[in-house]
Length: 134
Image 1 (spheres, rainbow, N blue to C red):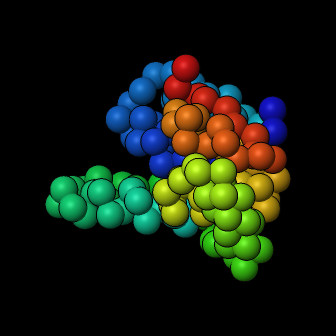
Image 2 (cartoon, one colour; image 1 turned 45 degrees about the horizontal axis):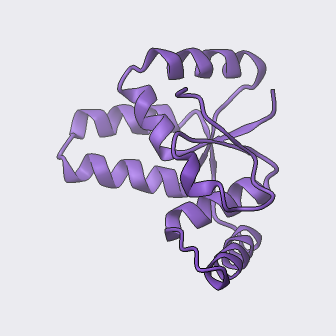
């Protein structure tokens, strides 16, 4: 098993108690000390919980995230994301900014992206993707 970057949708499944995703987290954490989570995923989860006024869930998320490896957007990962954007856009493919930044972080750090939104990431060369939901 290689080190992974957990995408927003997979983290949401985890917090909703999805048994398949919980099992995959358990197996992963036997080999690695922490989950890798991008600052983009952090933002997306916090924004969604704040929108729903889910204060208790937000507190639980903050406790959870405090013991994980939160990866920031670096200049290099932003450059990788910009390169992906330009390459895909020239081919007539558009991908959302958040997904591009998450992909850039995964590529820069040599991490496999764990997502259930595989179709979002299929066009991105050099990005390893795995689905812990299926």
